[in-house]
Length: 128
Image (cartoon, rainbow, N blue to C red; front, side, top):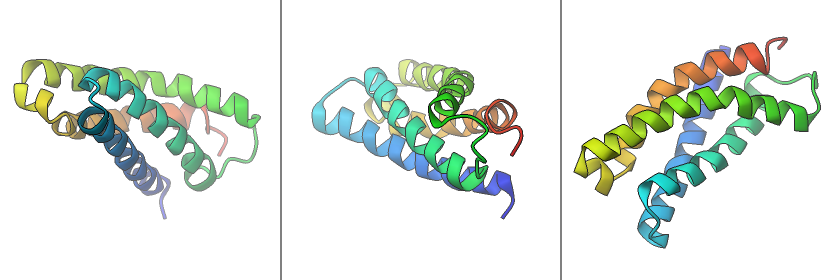
């Protein structure tokens, strides 16, 4: 399976985790859509790091896990900034997306996926 397709599969898992945590935080716990998005993204980041390291890039242990997770998080900051900025803009501009934040999560995640793939590939797993 091509690496970009593996990355897409892992991204789908991450999206599901992100969306599920976001839904629970907003609709079950009662948190706002912005704070909930930060929590859901953080958990999804850990899940995608694990699967990208073991499945997509099959990390050969170039870095310790702790160091690799740190680099992964740093590389993901740019993707997160794109993702969260677009998400927040949609939630702020459209009341429907504020009420149903999963509607804003979909397009923001798609845009950020391209940024994340190239960042993670070039910074964290470049030797893989």
